[in-house]
Length: 165
Figure 1 (cartoon, rainbow, N blue to C red):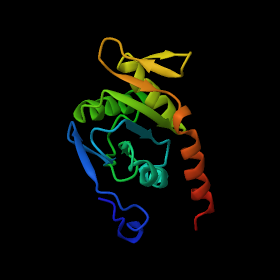
Figure 2 (cartoon, rainbow, N blue to C red):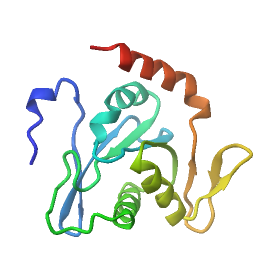
Figure 3 (cartoon, one colour):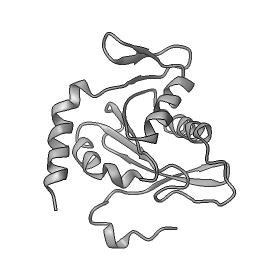
């Protein structure tokens, strides 16, 4: 278990855990449960802390879910584990199933792009180029692959991030 007591003021979110075949996966789940979902998937070797200012900003209007990949952040870091792209995609799929998430807007960074888009493909979400969204097919899952509607809020939040001490 990682001790974050010295940065808790920067990362004030309650922790949630999903047991994936005996390995604990940490995630943040903030905002109204009936609100549209923002699924924030970090890159490597970062963790959900990377999205802390976006989580704080968007949790007012959105359900914000930000997992830590196994091996990163507050998730378990087993030595004998298949740290493959496919395993991370499967873990994300398990988390979405556990949380009963059907529709998401993906917020992706670095390796999180491959993991998030791999998760969308695993759930058979098909990109629709005309509106940069994905439409549901066989498994009743859809996602938006860009933040067109949120762009100004994202820019404002990132501007605050870069200006903050």
